[in-house]
Image (cartoon, rainbow, N blue to C red; front, side, top):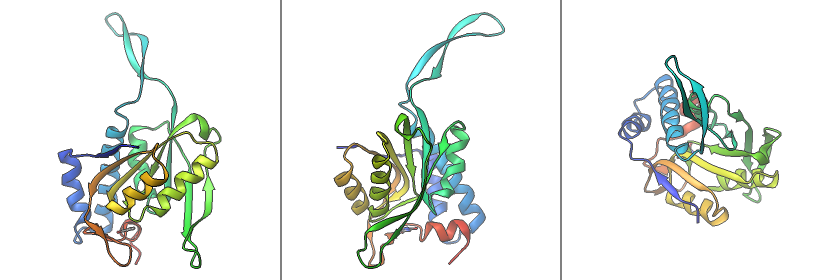
Amino acid sequence: MGNVYVTDHPLIQHKLSYIRDVKTGTKDFRDLVEEVSMLMAYEITRDLPLADKPIQTPLCEMTAKQIAGKKLGIIPILRAGLGMVDGVLRLIPAAKVGHVGLYRDPETLEPVEYYCKLPTDVEERELIVIDPMLATGGSAAAAIQFLKDRGAQNIKLMCLIAAPEGIAKVQEHHDDVDIYIAGVDEKLNEKGYIVPGLGDAGDRLFGTK
Ligand code: URA
């Protein structure tokens, strides 16, 4: 079973309270989502392997540490996942960015992929799927499946807020995927919104309704 990591970092929790607040306008919301995404990228990269690297300081030679192992890829789920990309890239600038877009088929209610553009070497990368809201878990589970169908072997999921239903869905379908979140909320309402949540993340990021 994949692990679920809920960060209790005070800066993340503090900023998340402003993200949730209905009084926070579009610009501040966008900036805060970017900042929290950057801080969460710090948490999610905690276990990256290091390798020794001989370097020369102004004083002497030394063996320093540098990140080794697989290269990273960031995969925002369209559209709200876009709001997290720049924050993650601020910490991991060399990561490649792929995009996955899904819609729900009105007949079958199944997620259907309408856009997918990934780094060519997806099977060799450690991928971080990002989406601010893990609600029903349908989109995240489907996006992860699309990545696996294209050869991805190493996937983590990073969200700001999750409903218990969403966590359960991802764990049910992808027990190899660790989930990183800043808050687990109470429930989903009848329209599929997370309660208390933050509303529609895409609308709040892009100023739409
Ligand atoms: N997507 C959102 O943007 N908000 C929710 O509460 C649920 C899904």
